[in-house]
Image (cartoon, rainbow, N blue to C red; front, top):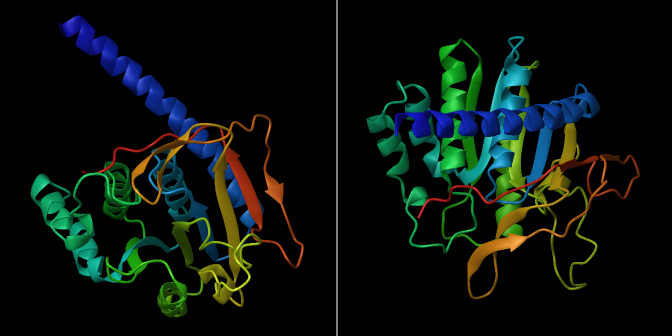
Length: 269
């Protein structure tokens, strides 16, 4: 039994190293093309295991030279006090329980869009660990209350919150915004109905030093919500896709990166 335990631990460690290496490669691509932009908007598929690891790598990379980094997550701003308390804690079980006691983290079954996961909690813990090392990093929420559905009011409110935090940052600080891929668009979605009013939050923030990145993958699965259920959904295989840089006036993203694979994260239930 002890031998089997050691073998399994070695396999898990190897898998973790591979995943980390992939995150490091994608993070390097993003940093290379984003350059000195101070506001990075990362458009994701919610509910994956790989994206929180990528964001963790970016926070680590950007803060390593002493640069202050604000990580803005698509969770209610009402969670900010709990986030601050956890970041100031020792990261023990009691502190995690207190963080998860908020309404946002309380879900029933699978009826949520994937943003609530152990992977996201581990991302927050990783930021706390960087603070222990002396890094100038923090985590904030910028969404409205839990019951608010996606609409123009919500996007405008989220953008206003991000603009407010950005205005208070030191001149050398960076903000990393993790959000759904539609919110990260610089332009109204091309396939939106003609009568649909939609200004994604990135559009509203375009006057700032913004760089929009679409996080995609060549294969894998994501967590998505259909009218009657939320479940794991397969991505269409797109082998050979490489990063795409765009500077066209009508672009939706400045950069489109393709991770090797995405998988459904460890969702809270």
